[in-house]
Image (tube, rainbow, N blue to C red; front, side, top):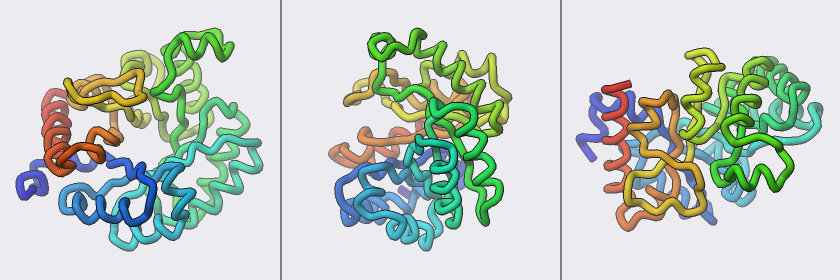
Length: 246
């Protein structure tokens, strides 16, 4: 733990959020207590948010932790804007909306965050990492995951969002169409040999960083490991390795 908390890992730590995708506030706080000597970034997703709400987010903020609020807002523009105005009363690090909500919704989201007391990074979810090309075909999308991610990312950039959430498999495509400063937040990160769970499009952390990922979300590969601290150490070392060859 002491090695991972050293300045040599500052940039690697800054690039990651540990996903608190658990079924109780108590379990989430136990992970934070165990991992926060090393990690200061945590993702609060739909399950935990609907159990514990903004009260739990506030408890993380009081500990000076970075929060990625992963609520994937997707509704009519007025409703999304209202939700973001409420969220941006708090100094969270990042929040997301579904890019497939369309240009008007994304523009309303941007305006809402810009007019709020705090301005978290606003990123658009492109194609969920659980979906395959066959799934998109069954949904009638009429495009491969790469093509659809490309289109949604271009629209998110047009609307002024700070970045997108995508799988590592689409990072090469995004380098061709978005600016270098555009955030590329990547879940579905797995080291070789680790279980992929329900993720269909995965990549090791070092390779994802080299391909252009700016932030990584580490989920069940860490939180469901027999030893979460040891698992986190493996992933942080891989992130650092990727940064040395970025």
